[in-house]
Structures are given as structure tokens and as C-alpha cells.
Length: 384
Image (cartoon, rainbow, N blue to C red; front, side, top):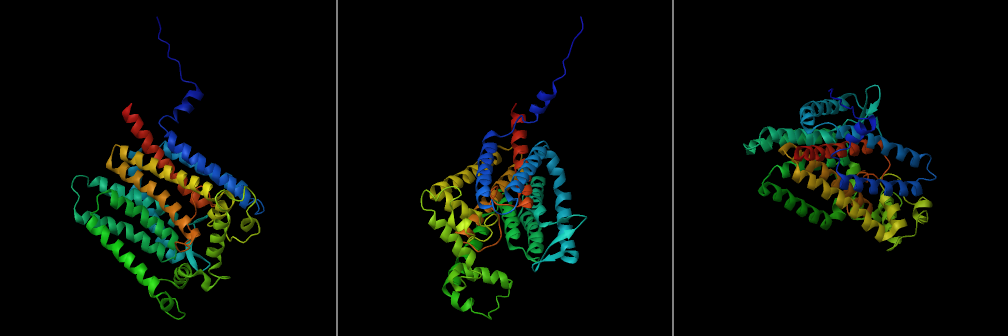
């Protein structure tokens, strides 16, 4: 009697690749992606091929997510040091040989023009999670100091370009790892208190500080102008304050229910600058109102919450820190973008995840989602 072993079909082997995928996380991303396609069609219908390109970028990000999700977290851990090292070396190369556009040196030509700072959004939390995993159970204050250096080195190089928005995202992703690793509140609270005091003093002495000719030393001139514009957009309503003023008008004019799909006057009369990229949230709020905005915020909240649940249930310190940090990256993206469009934060050029047009940011988001899916998949396979 012979034993016959049937080979699994091609279809069953393909379906096996999806075993362990986190359904709630995938659903949240799908809903946000649909919202992004909807508002991109409206805000970009007369903007060339933005809608088609946005769909293509989403497809590329989905493919990257799928591929990365197949990589076990242990393999990701071995890639942490090489990816971080390559990213920092490329940042140094940008400072020396980089391409300058609009006063910023952020790109380098390696056969194709790339922006190395985007790599660090994922490379930094990978590196810091690897560092703390290696020292699990024997953490000392010196370990946090080394981690702080590993974080501040790329942040400083990115700010030198200058690129405040990307530097903020890299800083927040690394700071999340430090926090989840157990950084003492005694070291967290003082900078927060100093920041609040600085904001209060800035508001009180705004007329003197924002007067022409005053040198802030630390910030570049365009960064100083953004802070001053945030404090008083009416200072230059047709210039630097135009973005914030028109964004707030669009958000307010949407009311509770919004003006309706394709009915946004501020959007379609082209009063909103960058209506398909950084300020697409204003176009969304105008057409779908407070009700739609609350649903969008709920979608992002659920995405971040689900990511933190994956982090809590992750089997190792490395995966817990990495999943928690990536979840906070999504939070930072959404919070900063909505804040700057609403006039409560300076304009720093941070896109709204899955909503704003932009290929590089979409690839980064797909990579982050793939890592989350990989961690969730590893957890489920361990349990079974």
C-alpha cells in the first residue's frame, strides 16, 4: 500500500501567505484608503492625473506591505544595523553632494534621485528597538544616553538640510521607543515643562520676537516666519498666512454635515493651496463637515489603537518597541497634519496618511504597515 501525499494547490499556497494577517488593522487601512481616494478624486479632478497616481501609489504601498509582512521579525532585527548605517551615511552624503531644491538640500542622485531622510523614519525605531533588545534585563542610564545619541545624530543631519517636518517625524518615532523602553518620567517631564513655558513666553512676546530684523539664532528664517504666521496669520494674509487662513475658512465653512462631495467652493475655486497634498484635510472637512471629520479621526484613532494592541501582545521586547513606535508614527503624521491645517501648529509639510498625495510617504507608510503585519503574524503563528 503506497502513501500518496497531495501537493497543495497554487491557490491554497497563495492564501497561506495571508494567514496571520491582522484583520482589524487591514480593515482600518482599507477604510482610510477609500476616504483618501474619494477626496483625491474631488480635490484633484482638475489636477492632471493625481487621482490615478494616488491609486497607483496605494497599490505600490500595498505590495510593499504584503512583501514586508512575509519577513519574520527576527530577520527584521538583523537588518536594523545595516539599514540605519546606510541611512546615516546617505544623510552625510546629502550634506556633501546633495541636490538643492528651493533652498533645501534633501536629495541625492544614485542613478535615481532619492530622499534618504525618508529611510530614517523606519530605520531609527528599528535601530533603537534592536539596541534595547540586546540589553534586555540589564538596562542602565548609559544605555538610554547611547540611544539618545543614535536618535539625535540623524535628526540633526535632517534639520541641517533643513527639513523640520521629517526631523519631527524621525524624532517622534525614536522618542516613542525610548518611552516604551522605560525612560524615566523624571527625564520626560522637564522638557515638556520647558516647552510649555517657551510657548507661553512666545505668545506673550510675539510682537517683539516677530518684528523684522530679529534673529532667533536657532531657527532658519523660513522656520521663524512659520512660527510667527501661526501666532498671527493676519500679519501677512496674502502671503505666508494665506495657507492657514484659507484652510481654517474651508474647515469652518463645511459646518456639521459639509457642503457635499465635489461641492467644496474653497477647494474647487482653488483658494486652498496644496489641496491635494499637505492641505487636503481642509478640502475633506469642507465637503464632509464635522461629521465626516470625526469619522476620519475615529479611523486614525482605531488604526493607532490596533497598532498598540499588536505591540502589547508582541512576543519579544524588540517587536513590542518596534510596533509601538510605528503606531505612534501614524499618530504623529495625523496629529501634525490636522493641527497645521487647523491653525494650531506651524506648517511643516507633513502629509495626512493615506489621504495626501505623495509617493515617498505612501511607500514609508506601506513599509510600516508591513512591519506591523509581520509582528501580528508572528504572534499568531507562535500561539498556534
